[in-house]
Each structure stands twice: as C-alpha cells, then as structure tokens.
Length: 243
Image (tube, rainbow, N blue to C red):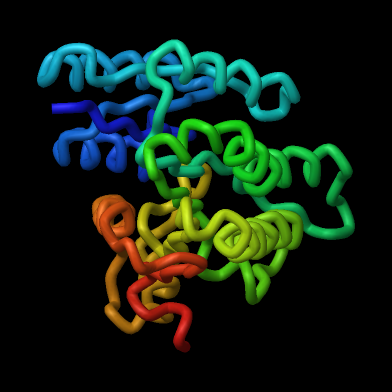
C-alpha cells in the first residue's frame, strides 16, 4: 500500500503534536517542522518510528529567515514527491498594545501567521497536485473580530483567513483549501491564569469548558476526506463566536 504523507508546521507541541499523532494513527506518514523545540521534536519522531518504522521525519526552520521555505521544500523533496495534506499550524502569539507595537513584532507575527502559510503552499504546490492533496490553515476564532492589545496578531490571522478563501478559488478544482479556527483549546503557555480568571473566560463559552487538541485534529482528519468542502473557516470554539 502506497504511503500517504502529511507535512505540518509547528508539530512539536500542543495542537501540532496532537495532530501529528492523530494523523499517524490514521495511517499517514508524518513530516513536521519545528523551530526551537528540538528535544520535543526528536522525542515525537522516535515514538512514532517505534510504532511504524520510518513513518516520521522532522525538519527544523525559523520562519523569520526568508530562506526557510526553500530549505523546507528541499527537505520534503528528499522524503517524498507528493503530499496528501499540508497543515499550516505554526504560529506566534503575544500581546502588542498599539502604543508600544513595533515593526519587528509585526514582521514576526505576519511571517508565522500569514506569509509562511501563503508561500509554503506556493512552494509545495507540485507535491500537493501530485498527491491530490488539501491545505488546512489554523486560524483563531476571535481574531477576525479583533482582540484588544493583539491588533497585530489579529491582523495576521485575518489575513490568513482571506488567503484561505482566495486560494480555495484559485487552486480549485485540484486542491482544496480550508481553515480551522480554534477557540479555547489550551491555556496560553505564557499566562499563569488563576482559577477565577479561567472561569471568567469560560463564562463566554456556551459549552462552558475548554476544548482539547484532539477537537482540532479530528476536524483536520475529517477535512482530508471531505471532498466537497473548500474555502471554509470551521470554528471549533465551543460556541464562543456566536455570543
């Protein structure tokens, strides 16, 4: 049976890690990118390869380096010449109050959240066309409506959703392009929220609880087989966006 390949950015932690493992369980061979999480990436690679030999490959890149996309594309080409799935998951996220916001912060947030997904999709088009593949971008349920003190991040994620819809039109009918828009799935790593703060945030979620990374990976797996869905932004947010 011919191997199916997925390439995912930001696969060493959190939602990316769960998505890699979920697709591996579904029989995919995994290629994932990481930036600084070297030990975590190697641990996942070893774990998955112990389950199925040579089924997981890792590639390092910093998306603030403009040569990163070219190097990743060459890395993928050494492993396979076709992809069934590209998941643009890697993201930078931090507050940028407008009075202190800098050009460097904008460049960083735009690079990981919009520029890289756009040009990585462009670079990997030959692989996706050959594999009759699909693209899945990871957005943010709150970003299009704006997030206080996160205007740069919100702008970048909003750009990603526009890119998703435009590429869905441009690449049809050969390649489907969709986005998943998570809500409260994991608490931010750099915030030490009290129980009361967590309760306050969850009070805005109709389902009244935080989600899990598998809620996102399950939708990603679904989208790979949903052959009549393209150009959509699917919110996985416990109903947060309808309030």
